[in-house]
Image (cartoon, rainbow, N blue to C red):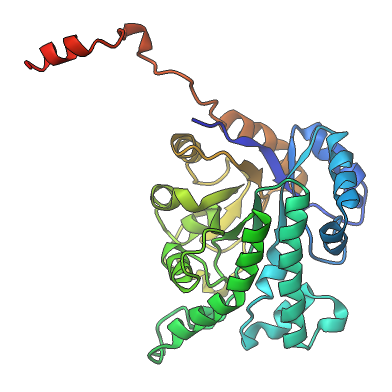
Length: 351
């Protein structure tokens, strides 16, 4: 049995213009002081701390980043290309909304933007290998998302073609991950074509069950869809290679339910919460990960409609640490056991 690693923290929600959130060196000191031992590193956006293209080309750069973090007792848990992965597949209805995920010179140029995104995710596979990482966090993007609800009636073959195209775009990327020995872990997330187990299975079908197509498990997204997030682990544990520790609550009323009535995050029945403030049963989740020998990282992704991020980060490290199960190396009833005896076993069976 294996004990998972943690606590880690995803830096994306904390990067900002003010110290200590404006430089990797000061951010590393901050998260280490809070008790984190790993950081999930975002690689997209103008304010990113990490030069993905340089990391794919230079082992020296990767060693320097790893060394800087090690000075604070930190490791990189995974690199993240959530923003770039989103741009691998964008339905035209979302073109303008997602343009902000790309460099300014690519905005308004969907084909160029997609080509850039593909090259970015491939570069992340190479950079992950240089850093000695085994998993990578990303999004799948979405072509079918506008047709999520089956009204008006979808034309025959529409969803199948959307997933076939998604597979055509991702299969060459997954092959690069195979070459580099790294798992691509898709966050199962509303807004992505891979948003639940059924859609992930569709994707596996169109990429031929690719061994590098895996899952970033985030129970908050499953709870807000009213899914069995514990049964999800039972069903897909062999494909779960990354873990966002994020809480959520769902409190429907007479006015709104899963769809939220176009309300903001504070008013919606389903909303993200800081760890321990929501409804996710993390004791059961960590128990299942211990049961299934999950050996990856437990990484806080902080999002909350109410609480200040610094309080959420401060509370997150001890919350995760207290939930990590140090797996046992022996059975609890070994004291009552006896030495193997084949003859006795046959006697006990009446043989």
